[in-house]
Length: 280
Image 1 (cartoon, rainbow, N blue to C red):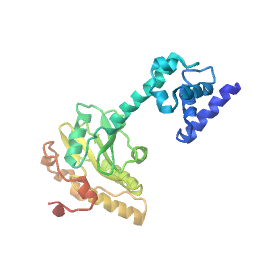
Image 2: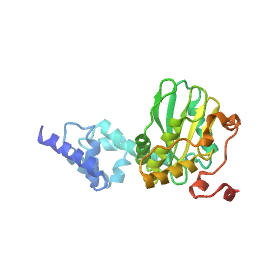
Image 3: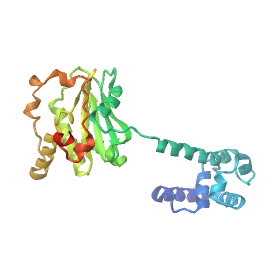
Image 4: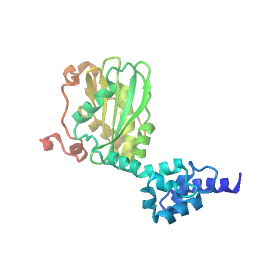
């Protein structure tokens, strides 16, 4: 490796470790020029750009023609530098675009149902939400054959940590046709809720879709049992807890699974600990 190549590699490693915040403007230009001027030392070219245009801002706002007048600047490099402000403006517009908000169970159900329409395989998604329950992102966590797909608490935690989420909603489908949660669904929801709780993150809901029907853990007040599980976990250590007796599938009312029955209970009210009486 030549001295020039060694310098570039050391520079890249420094960017990877430190980011660009602490670099001088001419050093940032030197780095930006690497892919477009591969066989030359771009440090002198960066200095020439700063001398010619007077500031980093002016360099990036210069025309392609004016940039090409600087010795060593290729057409590709000039085009790239000129495009950076345009890319930033698009980034800023996208960043500031109003994101969907999930104030109620119905908001989440209406948003998610399209993700499971006409699916023949089981799939799992997670919604990452900020502290006001605005959408940060939608993440596919897996797809399986038939009606089986694995989901781990770590996968959900990874999404929450990567996106700096304050709350999470998970959803999956039962292609077999019944939205009723299985024992495994309930246990996994327990584990995920416990794991997120220790991270200071709220699991707002777990929604199961089956055709036009759905089942919402939050809408059916299952989180009162899950919250109890978290308390038991803290006191007694790791342990599986059976699905509550009230969820005996033999006694469930088909009407509560109808897609037209969408709850308007507020996630925010639940997070603040308000009872149904308080919310009225």
